[in-house]
Amino acid sequence: MVEDSRLRAVVALAQGMAAAHTPQESWRAAALGACRALSGSFAALSVWEREGGRLRVLVNVGDRAPEEEEFPEDESYPVHQFPEITEFLHERWAGGGGPGAWVESARGLAATGHAGYSHQRVAALRRRGRGCCVVAPVVLHGRAWGELYVARATDAPVFDRADTDFATVLASVVAAGLAQTERLEEAHRLAFTDALTGLANRRAVDVRLDEAIEGHRGDGHVVSLVICDLNGLKRVNDTQGHAVGDRLLERFGSVLSLCGAMLPGALVARLGGDEFCLLAVGPPADEVVRVADEVCRRAAELELGDGVACGVASTEDAIGPVHSARRLFRLADAAQYRAKALRAAKPVVAGREGPDDPVVRLADAPPPAAGERRRIRGRH
Image (tube, rainbow, N blue to C red; front, top):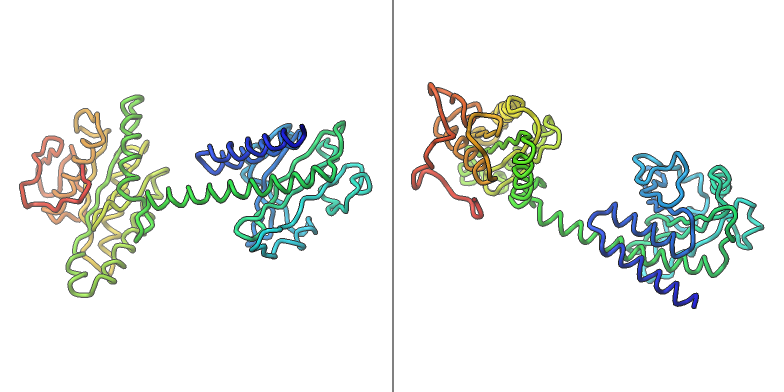
């Protein structure tokens, strides 16, 4: 009967982690599953940060102490407080058979019947009103990744040898779930990231812009889109080679990313070829235009290329109702092509006066004539 219940607990833990959509959900599912499986009152999942020599808590679940947050921003402890780490932190277990779990008790090491380790853990148990804990190292890709920690209340039985063996099994299940989460995160990153610049790609822009326009229709928040086209990339490719052209793309990507950081939550992306964009949700249109102007100024200072043509469209400007992402995109795109045609050193803004023109009303501007523009595959 005990074996059946523990098997069901293992399955439930694995299913919980498999159903997670984010790393945080995966961590929480791991800690909750282990807490239930071991009849604990509290559980935590932590990661060893080798570069800083610290154990950082990712999630706390169950009966938390007042100072314990579910997803703490900065709960970490120096490695030297945990002597047991030196036994396995730098070891490798390529063929499995990693370190086993152990028990600590608030009543002292002798009460567990096992070789205990850390007086720091015993002190923490007493301070937080817990009776005992079982600590199971988590091994991922053959190396110690972190630990699974489950505690019981003071009036509950102390964990025994069977519990430590089971905790070791649970830690292996957690490691498998973490590996799956890593794979999904990597697949997501590749699907929404431009390989050359490391910025978001067109797919990421489409998803975020659709969400932003839906929100704009709901509560009227400002959505602004800046589209930039690098001038002179073809000349650089033809005269200096594509490796130098790639360097220009990377350097402008860094410029756009740096300027985009001035707008909280902005998405910076490479659409493809020599076209980039910046999507801002919330900041006033004037602030976005100011940042776009800074982009133009910095791009002109790059030692490669001939600056950038920049167009801006914002729902806060006089461009008429924006009910679709496609409309805002086309307005920003038209503004960018107007900037290129004028060889403007500053951004052209849809619905505002344009450089060297009395009034450029791009909200109602006709689409560019055939042959006037390049089309990017996948463009709306």
